[in-house]
Amino acid sequence: MTVPSSSPPEAELPQEPGGQKPGDDAPAGTPGTGDDICPDCQGSGQINEKPCETCKGTGVVTKGIGGA
Ligand SMILES: [Zn+2]
Image (cartoon, rainbow, N blue to C red; front, side, top):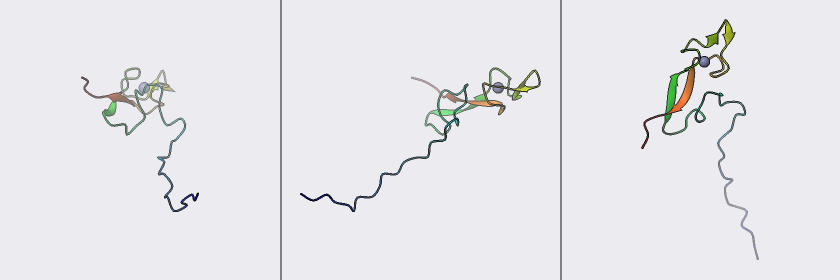
């Protein structure tokens, strides 16, 4: 019984811990999603002169687009 060792390693997409923001519906780049204005800071990225936690100060969140 032989085990082939020539099989290529499976490509794994790099996952960045913390890359997803609290306000995101899905990680950035997820099909069917897109950037939307953060509902908490209205796109300013700040609330009361402090970075918005929902969008991590980016002013945008990843939201699902459309829907069935
Ligand atoms: Zn925000």
